[in-house]
Length: 423
Ligand code: DOR
Ligand code: ZN
Ligand code: ZN
Image (cartoon, rainbow, N blue to C red; front, side, top):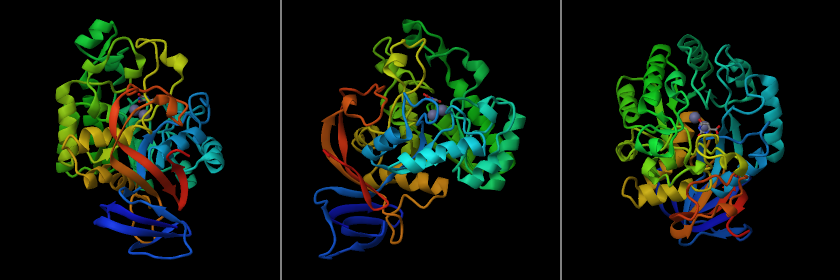
């Protein structure tokens, strides 16, 4: 296959210009001026050719909650969003806490996934925070990281043990920072909006206290720590200071947290309920500055599908989370590129190069010999988000009807076209 005349951007190799991409046996063979009469040609004139996106943080609900999402539907949603690799969080049923549970999931991935799906193992058995999971056993089967996502491990002694094992096993620790006792029954950011809607609030400290603790534990243990879904201004400062202190540390932000504030919540609509919650304008500005300054290096989605019935319960009762795979690129282009926060190459770094590097996986680059994982996109095309078009089972998005810029045209994974607009 040859992708012809596209503008190739690969921050990993410093490529930025119009080139052809030759793909053979699922790998990138050559980037340059290629003519080979025998090859299938994809015309990318007027479009950009990028390394396929890598999402460090998705929920595919499989096994256990297949009515919300499956490996099949989730991976198709990912492909539609330009993603060629995703990491699935372990809060499934059963929880991914031992090799036998992981085998169930790996079997589904083998049979259903259209892109690379890398499972994340839980930190504790059943995510109950009491007993460590079989981290080493799961590492042998191929988990890419450990995480207790959905909650924090509140027992610092237990978490320190997990971090020591993670360091020995070479696994990053993906941290959901939320003080369980402080959050109580909070549903939205603490303040006037939560008060108006009549639900308990979630203060910034709920996140910041655990973020500081986790950075300190990483400093003590030498573990590689990655802070998930940063939403507060102080979390950016915590990451900056941790990095300056030499901690092996990275952090992510989700499109909803840099696009919306609590003031965008129109009323009792649970599509605006996620964890951590939408914060204040000053938090959003700090997150954007964190991205611009390279303190926050990753954009991830926290793709969290739920059923329409669950989300219809209203903000107080509905589960936390929104879908994100099929809107992340456009929201990033709209808010960050057009908003003057990031350049195109910096955007690609945050969505592909950096997450691949942090995970230590062979992805996020178009160098010769690398797997042919590619997103072909337009940065200019605008459209209206319509959740009915999503490949995901989850339609729970606060962005329905929003005008955005940036469209994924084709996604190629391992040399195979896994998404093509309009097909
Ligand atoms: O909004 C969220 N949804 N945050 C989480 O931490 C968990 C996730 C889920 O699993 O639905
Ligand atoms: Zn989380
Ligand atoms: Zn999550």
